[in-house]
Length: 324
Image 1: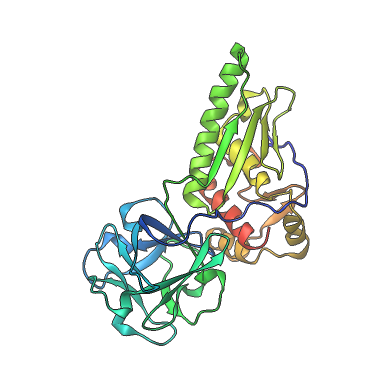
Image 2 (image 1 turned 60 degrees about the vertical axis):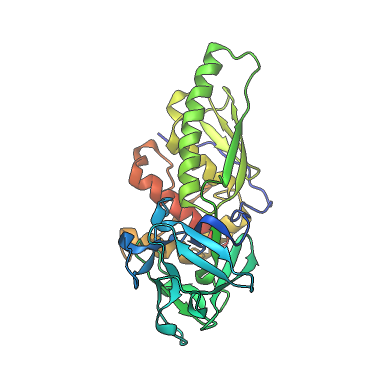
């Protein structure tokens, strides 16, 4: 059964990373733009020298960091689980130098300059090395390494420091003042589907978007457009999380932005294709079909599964990084 329904192609700029404040906070998530994964106290370590890696964002204590302004243009970054500080290990000064955690001591190896680079992202440069916190080898898998590298401005060195309790995607469901029994039932089902879909997008993605959702009995299935408007028809089969996620992808550019069309025509899915191949093998291809993509486009309810939901969101984020 196809999750179809389309979608208005427009030239408006699709959703980009959420413009959350850059900098200090008591429990900040530090998310890489390229991988959309979070800076992570690897294996919940608590001893000095503990590794720092990237992992799928889960809002757990080992992915939360206290970012404190030191009053000198730099910040201390302390993990909430380990109580250790992000540290230029062994005071390295060459590209490729390690980043680990160490007992907080106020040294220049633990001071980080956080500079806004726009779009809600920042560059984190170590005071001692003057090198940038870097997603090593543009990793996209859980456990991907981080390092220090010459600052280049690449997406591998752009990080969003945000409070994960602040919702980046929000929605409003239009409701009748005096709903019929049919409308009340539809509102309950749509709310459940949207709550689940929005929570998953917010956990795994950097997208900021305000959505307007309507119950539209005349709509055959469900549809959406680049302007953040979504409609669900009267068929209850489509009032589920998978359909909501599919339509949310249209609101951020899938099938509705010039960037999507251009990348489809020109094989421009560099990061997205690389991510897909980490899952499906070296010959996997990201395909476009009209207003949709596959695999993991959630175009049919036979695709609906926890694994596919997670991969769908990660792939949409990667497509945005590719310029969708």
